[in-house]
Length: 192
Image (cartoon, rainbow, N blue to C red):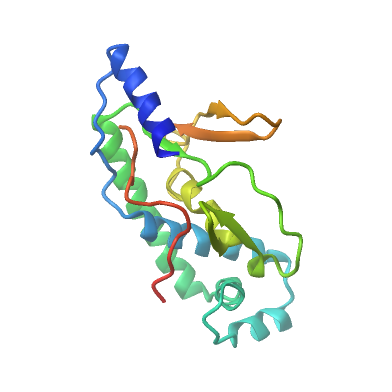
């Protein structure tokens, strides 16, 4: 992934585009991913019964399934806190885009995956770079583009940078400063 991003950034620079490999919005990938996941799970919980929500709230394990259950059962006070984070990140994106016109980010950390259809979804696994990781970690790279978007800062497109020999895309980048968050590779590590 990194080599494709760097190749794209170098091609843009070769065409006269000013590229900065160190430019970043002022927030960490982990913080934006946690915020995105919390707000996403909260939104997905709309069709879950009150009894199930109460059951989910009692989950205490430190597993992807239990974390997802707790996010589904998030109380309004918690949601307000995550929403405030989102609004702060939106302001940081606005500041970033006063200096830059675009940012290149991967949409996914790997080529198209073989899907795990086991249940529950939060318990599924994926393989990224030879490492096993929780299924939900695959959306980490979407978080910067999606968590704090407003109409004027929403990503406008995704562009495919390479294609595998099969029909599945090998890699894509959100076209929206080059190699943002380059220290992030493969699976996201939970600090909890």
